[in-house]
Every structure is written in C-alpha cells, then in structure tokens.
Length: 269
Image (cartoon, rainbow, N blue to C red; front, side):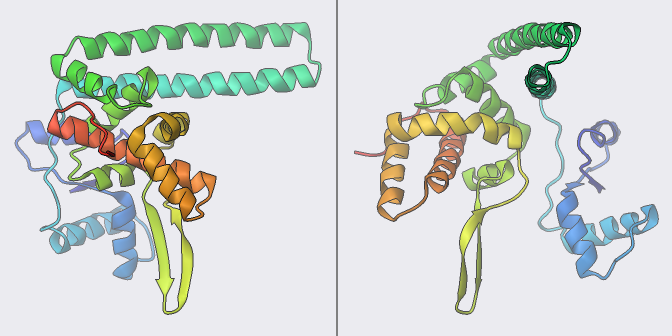
C-alpha cells in the first residue's frame, strides 16, 4: 500500500508489480482524513507508514488492486502532461508580454518575450501533431477518439483531453469519472439548514478549462445538453451552474460512448 504522489509513486508501483507484488495505491486525501479520524495529529514517515497499514486493514474490502495501464496509454498521458506544461508556459509568457507592453519596457525585453512565445507556439504545434500521430497509430485509441468526436461539441482539443482522462483510470461509473474531474456538486444539509450545492474542489482543472467552451457550444448544438439547459433555466438556475452541469453531462456521455463502444446518439426525442 502506498499513496499517490503526483508521478513520483509510479516508478515504485511498476517495480513492485513487475516483482510479483500486489500493489494498492491510496488517495492521499482519503488517507489524511482517515488519519485524523484515528487521532493521528502529527505527520512523520513512521506515522504515515502506520496510517497506511491501518487504512489497508480497515478498508481492504473497498480497495482495488493497482494494475498498470497499457504502454500506449502511459505514453499518451506523458505527452498530454508535457502539452499541459507547455500551454501553461505559453500563458505565462503572454501575461508577461501584456505587463511589459503596459509598463513600456525596453524593445529588447518585448522582443525576447515575443521570441519565447513563438518558440513555445511552434513546440506546442509539433507536440499536438505527435499526440495525434500517436493516437492514430493505435487502432483502439483511434476508434475511441472517433467515438468521442461523434458527440456534438467535442472537437480535436477536447477529444484529446477526454481520451487521456477516461483511459487514465479504471473508472467504475460515469459519475466517478465526472467526480475525478471535479464536476460533481456537493450538497450541505443539516436539519432545516440547506445550502446551495457547490462544485467540489480539486479535480482536473486542465480538463475543466478545455471543457468550458465546448460545454457552452454544446448548450446550443447538442440536443441532450440543450434540453438540460432548458430544464435548468426553467428552474431558475444561474448561467454558471448550467455550464458546469453541461460539462458534467459531456464527461458522462464521453464515458458512455467509450464504455459501450457506440457512437453518440441523442436521447432527446
């Protein structure tokens, strides 16, 4: 039993698996909550080891043994992580350019920033092509992407994100997949007190960012999501609540078409 620590636990999990050892990877948030419930207030390596052992004993019936993904999925995830990093760097340079122009910085500074932006844009373009070539080079990935693109509102950018997302974990349901992205509402009720539901914190912000504009488009052009929008508007829901619900619906539809290996068919008559 070990905790997921970004990508730093992956080398150990593969090494243990190849040695024939059963591996279980725990969500750090859940083990942290478990530690608090058991009265562990301090945090040391020794205590963390004890907490993980107790957690494994207490929750063994709910734990799923870790299985490595296929090599092509692992490579796709690595390519997508690199693309995400480059896009963040590109946005930072764009922000620096805006500030430099506003502050009337020297021409040398502005030229340097513009050259960096151009280099990043070229590398992003080449990396996107590499990702598309990688997907096209594996029949199942290529088929799954075609299924995703059968959904109105899902184009090249979103199909890359959803393909990597859905293949990154062994999700048990569409709701679990949407929760992993951070799109499932959290309800707070106690007695007569009832607060409006809010979107859970955390999740895959990079996926949500790509889904946002796709969901806005889908609210008009996707029949199922348009029907969802009309129902929520009739109940007086805010625009942002509608968009988040549309994003959640898109993830659920995407999970469904890949799970059932069938192109999207609108359910609204």
